[in-house]
Length: 229
Length: 259
Picture 1 (cartoon, one colour):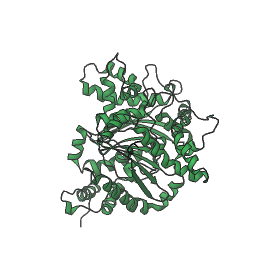
Picture 2 (picture 1 turned 30 degrees about the vertical axis):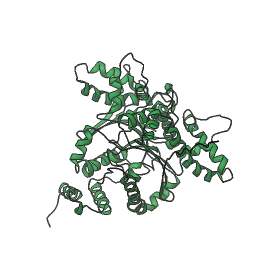
Picture 3 (picture 1 turned 90 degrees about the horizontal axis):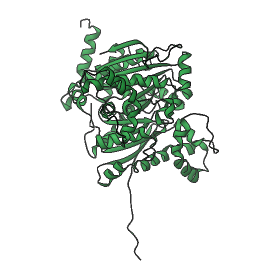
Picture 4 (picture 1 turned 180 degrees about the horizontal axis):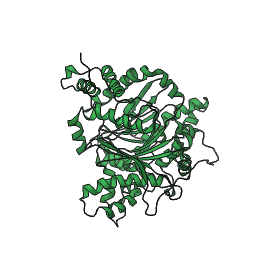
C-alpha cells in the first residue's frame, strides 16, 4: 500500500493514483460509470467524521454510486431548530431529492471532536469554531457525565462517542420530512461505531414507535444490534 | 492439490498481498484482482442490495485486505493521525476522494458537503466548516488544502437555477448553495452567452476557486500560507470524460508604481 510521504512527490503520486483508478476501475467498469454519469441513486446517506482514519469508502467499502456522504467534525447532526447548516442541507438533498432508503451515522474511537466537547469548561463561552460546532453534542456530554462518574476521562470520551451518535439519531427525527418517511417505512435510521484500536464495527437500527418515538428520558429505542470483529 | 477450505484460501490470498520487499510488490492490477477474489469468497460483492449485508461485507473486506495486512501502520494510526491533506469534496456518491485518488487511512482529513463549498470566515455562522478548518490547520498542522469540484454537481445545478426573486422551495439547500453566488455572477458575466449546461460546468470550476479564495479569509490559513507552511490547490473530477484537473493557488502582488 503506497503512502504519500513528502514534498513534491505528493502530487506526482496523486496523478499516478488517479491514472491507476482510471485504468483499473473506471475503464474496467465503463458501463457502470456511464450509467452513473447520468444519475446517482445511492441507497445510503452516511454521516461520518472528517477524521483521516475513518473514511466510509475505505472501512465499509462503498463503491461509486452507493453512498451519499456528509463528513464533518465528530459526525454530528444538529437539530432542525438550530437552523441552516452544511449538514442539514446535505440531509435535505439526500432524503427529499435522492430519496435514500437508509441513513447511517458513524461514530469512532479516539475522536478529537468528542474529546474537545468533553474538555470544554462548563461556564466559559467559547470563541473557537471547534467549540461552537461540537456544542451541538451538549446533550451527549450531559448524559455521559451523569452515567460515567466512576470512569476515567478516556473511558468517558468513549462513552460519549456512542452517546453522541444516538443524540444525532434523535436529532434526525426533529426534521419533519425525515420523521414522515421513517413513520411510513420508507427510510431506516442506523447508528454505527468504528473502533480502530481493535478493528471492530458495531451497528444498530433505530426502533421507531409512533406512540413514543423518542421515549421519556430522551433515550432512543434500538433493534438489530450487531457487533463485527 | 488437496481441498482448501474457504478460510485457507482467504489466508493464502492474504499472504500474497503482504509484501515487505519492494521488488516483490504486486502490480496494482493483480492487487485489485486478489481483493476482488477475497470479496467473492466472503460472499460480498459491490452493489449488494440488502443494506446490512452490504455494510458487513464491506467491513469484512476492509479488515481482511487492509487492517490485518498492515498491523504496524494501523497500530500507529490508532495513537494519532498526521494527515498531510485537508480535502473538501462533494457528498455526491460518485466522487469519494478515497476511491478516485486512492487516499489511504491516515492521509487526508476529509470534509464533505454539498458542492464542496467553503464559506468565508464567520464566527456566528457556518461553524461546521470553520471547525473542520480550525482542527485540520491548527491542531493537525496539515500542509495542503485541496478543494475538489466535479461534473454534474446537483448543488451547483441548484445554484445556477436559484430563482432571481429570492423565493425558495426548500428549508436548507438554497441557504447553503447561495454561498456560491459570487461564482455564479462571474460565470454569468463571462459565459452568459453559452447554453445553461455549459455555464453549469464552468460554475463547478469557478466555485472551487471561490472556495479557495474564501479559505484565505480564515486567519490561521492566511498566516500559514504567508510562511509557506500551507499550500492551497483546486481540483476538478470529470466523471463523464474520466479526467482530473489540478491547479495551484498563487498570490501575486505586483511592485508598486512610483511616480
